[in-house]
Amino acid sequence: MVTGSFKFANLVMIFYLFITLIYLSSHFIGHLRQNFSTVSLHPRLDQISPETEALLSAQHVLWSSLGSNRLYPFYFKARAVSSNSPHDVTITTLVTPHRLDALERLAHHYQGPISAVLHIYDDDSDPTIQAKVLDRVKKLYARQPNMQHFVDLHVVIDKYERQFNMWRNLAKLYARTEYILMLDVDFLVSPSVRSVLTTLPPKTMDAVRQGAAALVLPAFEELLDSSNSSNSSSNNTRRTALDNNKSNILGMLNDTGFFPSTKEELITEVNNGRVAMFHKFWLKGHGSTNYTKWYTSSSVYKVTDYNFAYEPYVIVKKEGTAWCDERFIGYGANKAACHFELYVSGMEYFVLPDDYLLHQYHPYPEQTRSYERHLNKKLYEHFREEICFRYARSMMARGVWNTKKSTNIKKECHKIRHWNSLIRGAH
Ligand SMILES: *[C@@H]1O[C@H](CO)[C@@H](O)[C@H](O)[C@H]1NC(C)=O
Ligand SMILES: *[C@@H]1O[C@H](CO)[C@@H](O)[C@H](O)[C@H]1NC(C)=O
Ligand SMILES: *[C@@H]1O[C@H](CO)[C@@H](O)[C@H](O)[C@H]1NC(C)=O
Ligand SMILES: *[C@@H]1O[C@H](CO)[C@@H](O)[C@H](O)[C@H]1NC(C)=O
Ligand SMILES: *[C@@H]1O[C@H](CO)[C@@H](O)[C@H](O)[C@H]1NC(C)=O
Ligand SMILES: *[C@@H]1O[C@H](CO)[C@@H](O)[C@H](O)[C@H]1NC(C)=O
Ligand SMILES: *[C@@H]1O[C@H](CO)[C@@H](O)[C@H](O)[C@H]1NC(C)=O
Image 1 (cartoon, rainbow, N blue to C red):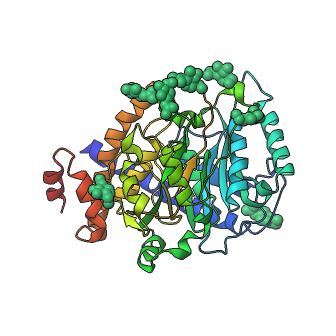
Image 2 (tube, rainbow, N blue to C red):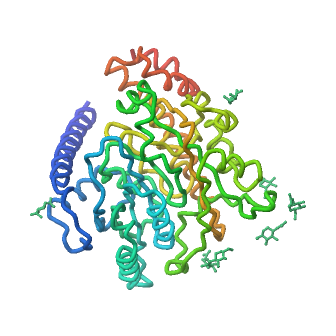
Image 3 (spheres, protein in one colour):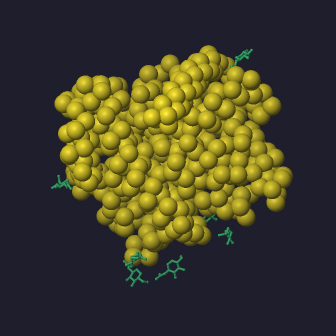
């Protein structure tokens, strides 16, 4: 009994702290927003306000990542990004120093708002690395108008590599439009993506506006050797794209920048074996998009065979949609976990018929991160159960358990052992 009430008091205390922190962080986020209209092309490394510091430390407590020593939101702030274009889409993405060239190419190609998190590894063996990288970033902004116009750059400096979901959340948190496209930096997007929200059927757009629908952009990849597809899309999972090869940090990688400008041209390239669906060897990742259907579709269609490894690139509403769970650190399951939570929360996935993404090939030393993958596989199993029960209880509490909102959770979560009996007991 004594321990019971002690636990209860603890819970109350934690709850109180939690609410306080949420209040504080929303207060400071609101405060920061007021300054979004100001324009600066000057590094803000030394200009962190006390409010921002407080916000960041609040986030450190709230967030479940390993942590971050230093975080500089809007280290560079884009000139041409405005929060007043309701249908604009901000690309949210992550970049490490050796992939800055990809960010530059994306900005050049997209000509639209980008919210990018740059992670710099705090390397004791090379204390000059931060200055070197930041200097390179400054030069990049100085010579590249597309970076100045479109790219908000948020810098994270710490010793924790591959905290992809924390970085994803930051890029989303600081995006300045209502809709975001969660993308990896080594993709290019079809030209009409920025205005695609104005072309949707009203019903689909309503769902997107309510944060109840995600729009899938089918992803493709350029094959290594255009004349021979059998030696092309090697098994090297291109996930190493985000890998931080320190000896490469100041090096440049070669990208072809090839991009088919229409769906027809893309399909021709697919038939020629120059381009294929992204990660064809791992069908669970993107197969649910149903590429065969996409090739002949001229209207938006719904994803009907979701699986928990599905990790499409999507446009979603920024506010009110689930964040990525930051306990996933390193390779494996991190992006799938973002989607699992979105899906279980009731999100419907619709595939856009005319837009697409193309992964840009870049040569990479393969570094298998099997340790991280194994770890995350285990974490993901537990995570799925947790998410299922958490959202089930939340939906019951909100009185939406018997509505359309629970279609996905019922479809996906009944695979959990004892799900039916536990859920029956709960309501
Ligand atoms: C907003 O900008 C004003 C004027 O530049 C500055 O005084 C204020 O500290 C800024 N607030 C934040 C939260 O950065
Ligand atoms: C691709 O390369 C393999 C191995 O070099 C070869 O056997 C095959 O015929 C080539 N295919 C095409 C379409 O060129
Ligand atoms: C595949 O491509 C790599 C890199 O270009 C080359 O070293 C290798 O010989 C190729 N293999 C075949 C079977 O063509
Ligand atoms: C990819 O890996 C699978 C299984 O590991 C193997 O059977 C297949 O031949 C590989 N394909 C290529 C192109 O290396
Ligand atoms: C990093 O890249 C360099 C140059 O591409 C390569 O020689 C080196 O082996 C890579 N390092 C690791 C740890 O893979
Ligand atoms: C990139 O690759 C292309 C085609 O292989 C080559 O012509 C070009 O010189 C390369 N550029 C760099 C900077 O290595
Ligand atoms: C994909 O689409 C095709 C054509 O519309 C359809 O026949 C097939 O059943 C779909 N596959 C899945 C898994 O839904």
